[in-house]
Length: 126
Image (cartoon, rainbow, N blue to C red):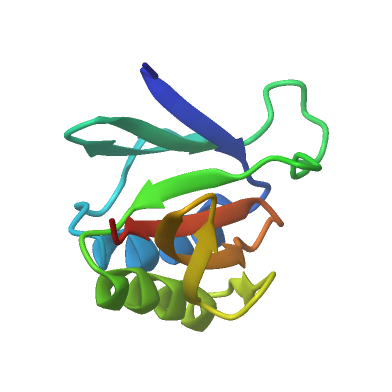
């Protein structure tokens, strides 16, 4: 459905370190700085980018927005979460763990990147 997802960041080097570590735990190769203002990750199912806002204003997180990444296992989701926290992220919502909603069981781990963008690492158990 999606071609790409992009989030803003003021300090691309800090954001790159965070996402390289976190997404590396999901098996995604380190990003490339394809322009001085944009950092790109390429996966089998799409592209994720971090960019300084084009209008020159400070980057902000979207209130109610979440970017979700698929993990192959609960252990991989937890490792990615922990790598993100170690590299400038902040855990948010409930601690990583299994959530049951509407009969579905999903392992979820939420955190915010150094800019405040909300990230979810998810593995469906059913």
